[in-house]
Length: 295
Length: 259
Image (cartoon, rainbow over the protein chains, first blue to last red):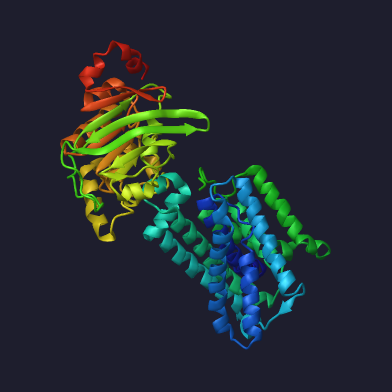
């Protein structure tokens, strides 16, 4: 029982970050029908910003807003420079563009910074733990879960209670009709990219706090987790993306603890096999979306 | 389904700053409008006008170009030639957001309500371009004018019947306080009883002084409801006149029964 609870807490902590990443992927998919493989680059760019700031003596208290702002700005720049030019193109073109952005960003850091891993100091409390009975809980997981819950509540408020959220949901359902209602396509798309950048920024803060390093390919792992979680939850569903994030986080933690030591290194492979199995029975993911119109 | 207790909303001032032409004056004028899909002309050299306070029908068989004409006026399709003048302004090819702000609202074919949004949210998004302070009063007005919708205010629109959904689509379009309401096939796919509801709505809107341009395949019902109508065939306007005049034209018989 203790092990189960321990796994649950660890899984929720990990899943929270995945949920934030997946939600950002799902928001963009909703309005543009774009599966954004460049989403992880927001963490790459903000990771380098964090590295430069932290190694220059800036505290983590200042690095946190910096990471978030850089992530939002990067998301908007990517939309302006790359995706706005292929708006209305086929899904395949959009997909290829996102791959292009992914590789270009990596190449920029490879060429102009360094191919090697760059380390920066992690906050001291990240590895601290506290005990609840026989459970050992990391402060980091506690903070991640709390911040994620607050973020999800704020995003829910934004989407459900504001005209911007309403226009975003309407545009995700049927973009042409939303435009007929006077919804400005540029504003909605930029708003979606800003929101996606904000979510990636918050996830990025925790990702970078845990990692304490960055490199040109640092965005690949978070991108994969975000896209996978969004797929597991059901592409186009915002609730599904959050659910997918938590499911993926829990699956990784549980498998890592339950698999025999000899094959523990294959955890990721087993997770992928389970996802493939899920898609055989539920091709649309956990929450199937009836329609997802594209711009 | 019971007949709606519709009573017409007031013709509130449009959100557009440009004054609406007086009753009987030309509100919309389409001249020589041509729209192509690739090499195929779906609409050729179409002329029509709508005066303030009129209900004007666009009738014709499938593929006649009715929806293309409406879509081009509404900014959903780019014309290849011709002009659209609304309230004296050339709005040819203007984006639909801009047209809405200038007082032109479309109830699209198949209603296209947002099925995952509630009835209230659908109406709210209809008033997206309005100042925030104006929306509550208009929402109250819609709730009063569409009792069926008021009863399902917080229900996702996907759960509405066809007739209810059509009322929602019309209410949503009215939320923008349009000078010209355009409807594309409002009776499409509805049971006969619900078709009566839709034409009752059109009658009520006309009684309230609304200006309406309606694309409709149910030609005989449309001609009875409209002040004037245009007949389209193979992308061209082939006739214009009052309902009685057009119904008396034996050469158009196939158009009416074909609809």
